[in-house]
Length: 276
Image 1 (cartoon, rainbow, N blue to C red):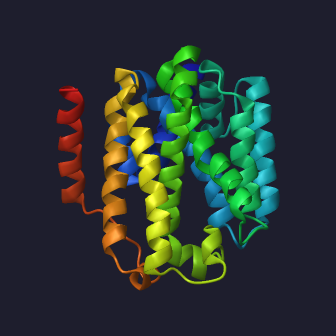
Image 2 (cartoon, rainbow, N blue to C red):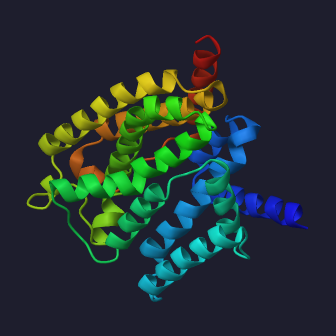
């Protein structure tokens, strides 16, 4: 029965991934089956927490997040939860020895979304570490499958990739974050709206992250390289579209990558990694 429930738990996280993020879901399909469920479980955990702070406005969000966190630690202690998402995640945490510091850093960033609307330079670094870099490191723990030497070697690259992804998400979601959630994540946008000058500064920082991260992707274990490189190419393409979109338009629309373009990126990722 426990094996069947674990399967259902993993399927629940997979369904959450495919429903909320088609691009991330496609990347996951190119991970080796031996690690795929674990990555789904990480995404399921972080997505539910993110939904609590971003969309459950008619409910007591602080209480919901607190209960979600407490139930996770109960699941970790017991080795099971009746919440399928938490059940799958606690299994992954134990199997791959994911440090609690990473989970707490992520939850701290989610909590800050409940009471903070703007961030200073140091505050946004801390937020990005918890909301994205720490999640990337959880995934890296799965990718290296117990090889701590490899983990420590690739850790800086994984953090830069996570940071780049988060900053692009900020730019892509600028309209929603500003007008609906009333949040400003880029410190330079506290005093003035997005314009071509500050957009260029933000993008330059992101491209530097990409350049460093790519060196780490090349060194990933084979079981993870294609999936991560697929996500990397997708976000690079998204970044290019944002770069070519006038700043004032970014405040009124959400940039997307069309399915045909995604398929071309998948082909490029496959042949690039296949032939090293």
